[in-house]
Image (cartoon, rainbow, N blue to C red):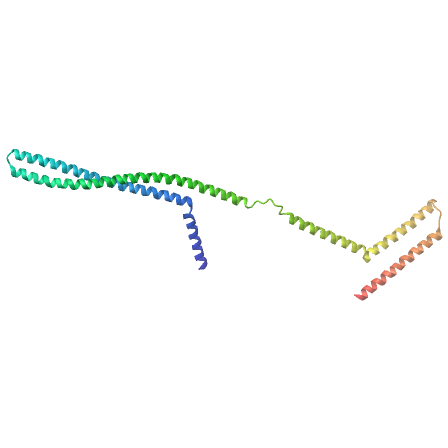
Length: 257
């Protein structure tokens, strides 16, 4: 239920935002002004129509009064005073109506003239407000364009924001290189490294012995069997000693584990 009311509020707020849009508000205000002007013009037309009716009634009453006066004169010429008196009475009633119509017509004419002036002023105001509405709509569009430009430029950055990534990568690479160097150092000093060095030394000694035999066979050098034998025995003795020491260390390591 809460989500439903939240949805209703969102719909209402969106509708209010649309209704409060300056462009829509200006268009609505312009339409309201034009509608009011049309309505006032219609009322002015009705007022002028009533004024013209009053003018027609006054003209008719004036003609009737003149006619009655002529009829009264004709009756007097004919020697009929009673008939003349009756025409004059009707003329007096008509004259009273004429005075009333004159007063009413004068008021109507003044009202109509005031309405005409008000209509002209309203027309000028509508034209002025229409031009102002167009200017405001242009300003609103300009502000929207400026806002769009500002939003588009918000994502731009000219700072070296990637330097941190490069620094972190450099640090990791340096750590890995240091680790590799440490492992290499440990490997070179390990037991396996020493055994490989001893094997290389034995192979060098065997190769040297073969080389000397080849020289003796080819007559390129003087044979020195005693020295060679002594050197070989000393080398074998040294190798045997290191092997014995290595076996002891290995045995101690196994017994300790």
